[in-house]
Image (cartoon, rainbow, N blue to C red; front, side, top):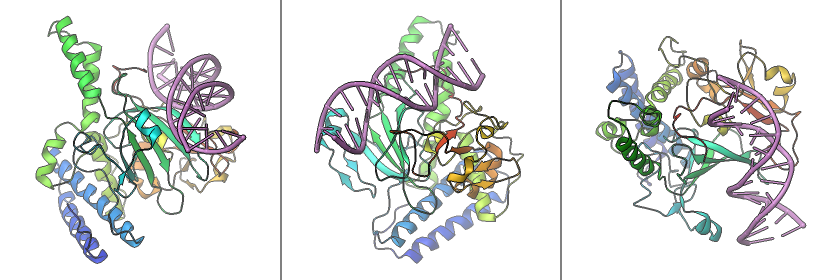
Length: 358
DNA sequence: GTCATTTGACCCAG
DNA sequence: CTGGGTCAAATGAC
């Protein structure tokens, strides 16, 4: 869906209203897989409408760039290697960036995790004049893939938005293809190597599977990102926002508590299991005053929940997204935000399995 | 034992 | 010298 830069805000919102109506019609009946994909496409269009509207309200005539096109989340880097600014403008790479790697693009997104790739966090640093730490990630789909991204939560009120900077192109697909070819030469076709099993497994989250091929037929310009489970969760979430009610939790997914938070580090890898902390209270119990440093919301679980995801009660209830601000953990250099705490996050399990740290 | 995350330290450009 | 980016040992979960 292309937006005319001269369009009025009312036109954009009217378009969003129309999309919402179509989505409601879609959600009024049981969804098969195609219906879910269509609903996902609608939800993404709604996200775009929101971002465009916000941009227009802020006086920008150019819509912020959001995830579009292919399901990988990276906008055809091979065709256009110029980096773009937060508003989609072309960015001239700095000398350092030219030497260290090519900035593929920058974007602003409310969901820095859903770009279709699997990322391993390798650094976190407090940035001057920013309320939030910057997070550094490397692609985890292949140990030799050089793609990286930086995630920086924007200051200011309202729903958290994240500046995401992608550096270097993904080579994981090629690397995995070549590795698979090598593996197939080594093993009989009747054996399933761990590597291959991992590749199959991650393909769901890797590029959304067949979704990328289907979506263009649903809405031109819309793309699917993330796994089918993520898509379903987003549809559920969106339905909740639209209807103002909590959808039934019997959708069958996700099956287990897992992570997320406004902390972008907690967004990276959707998966079945939590890692570093649990919802049994072990982390929260470490600091009774944990929530004091940041605006949090409490629910009947006894935990404080990030307000951004409180917009999405259905998904929140299902996924048990958790962030705990702990002001007792102090560092001089890194990992402290200005609120006086840092986020202890629950991290989901990596699903790839086949590829470990570089 | 393995592996992902955390985090103190280091490197380097400006 | 400062700040951003990265490395790698330590840590903890599984």
